[in-house]
Length: 228
Image (cartoon, rainbow, N blue to C red; front, side, top):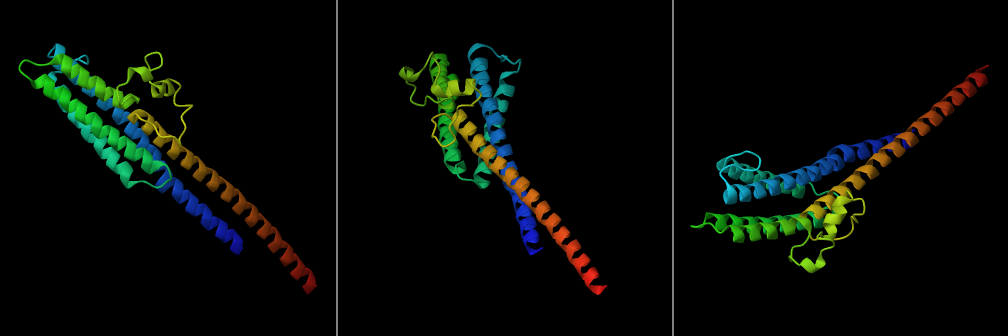
């Protein structure tokens, strides 16, 4: 029975790992991916709005687009800080540090874009070049080297097109997107391990309890027979 209690304690510990550690880490990585897409879309919308018209490709006014970009930037930064605070598994810290470095380099290029658009007269070509440099940081070409492209795609864009199925979670990547995908994969793997551990311990615990029950019944029968 003591062994059964020990296994049940392990099961409770593994279950806690799923609820308190693994699942929140997966959710945080998913949120980072969503916020990154939103951030880059709002930055591109800001460029289009300022460069071509007072209304964006999404039908928003310039001031609304600017507010949306600032909100997306703040939300990504907040989610990144939460991910930092929730580091629990091997592989998380390198990915999060790479995401943070890429994010702040990305912001620097977007601020250059906004500066060029604020000039009198505005400098749309310089602004577009700054946005392209920022987007390169997202897709894994931070050095802006066209010679590294494959059919006009970075190797990390090709991984994304394959839904990251060929992503190596132990490998370092250049782009923010790939590092977010790496973080998510590491956390999903940790969640799978924790779930499997809960399942295995639960099955073993049930087996031990069943055996203990059988032994208890046999002991009672033996005692009853001895009393006859």
